[in-house]
Length: 387
Image (tube, rainbow, N blue to C red; front, side):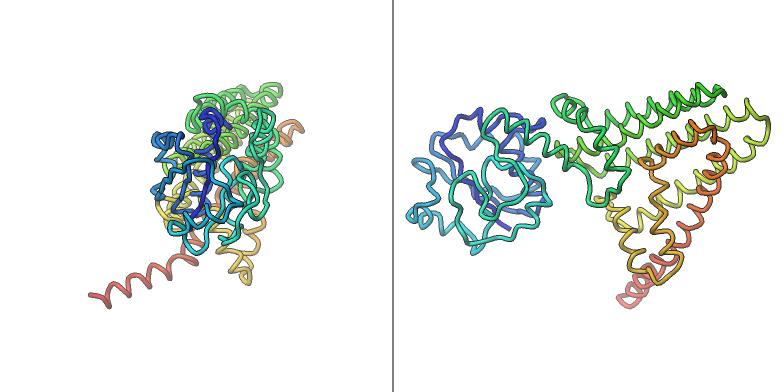
């Protein structure tokens, strides 16, 4: 899909003004690439420097960029101007206003069109977004980006968490903080929470629950920052998952140690069952992620599994697991951990977590066999035929 941008006669500072940590024109084009645009025709006034884009070429992921110099600002209402660039345009293209900040879901929903816009600042087909024309609209655009930095699969709990994170994400977007650095900060907070739980008395439990809730917010913020600043990567997804696993193990070990101090030996037995179930779940789900997603797109794992179970909804196990699997996610678990801890139900939480962790790896094995074994056998059969 081709996108057309016509740059007006504006100062370089207007083109490159910071919007949530990314220059405006770069943000507009990088968003389009993530929405499926693979080539650009950029019409510049002759005095503009096309080299502005060169330091950011990596954000465009190989999209072809054709620059055209114009003696003056392109007039989208002038038929002569359109005829002059007609040979460079595909039969249908996406008109992309140079200052229109939106997110990829909006652009993905817009079909290419031969229609022409009314001005350089408006899309042919309006959608959610903000036209940046002043400092106040920059702030409005940043609020828009942060509010839409979640995923379509987010549920109630994730939406609550992200709402709490919004002011901090807006602040962090203007700092050098990377998503991975935020992930590590969340790990440090989670380890502190585990140490508080290990002390074995109510006030330390309550403080540990609140700290672990904060670590869950860090877990939301790293993804929000990655999407807003175009810093998503397969390695980052794997690293975040690795850190989450460490935080689970540390938390469960801390709760076990704290309840052992308070109640004696029985929490040790339940805690060992919980830790073993967690380790097995980590291993089996790692295999499942490998089977379910492309190596370069591990972030699609939960969506892919949801699709498979929804398509298999005639099966009772798939139907039930599709409804309850959200509760094993950290963004959801932190809410219930706080509730159980404050209400004095930590022993119940430990027992339910032990049961849930062992059901998780057993069910993951079941789905690996149900969804992926036939694919593996089919691949092996095709290999034998080709040989």
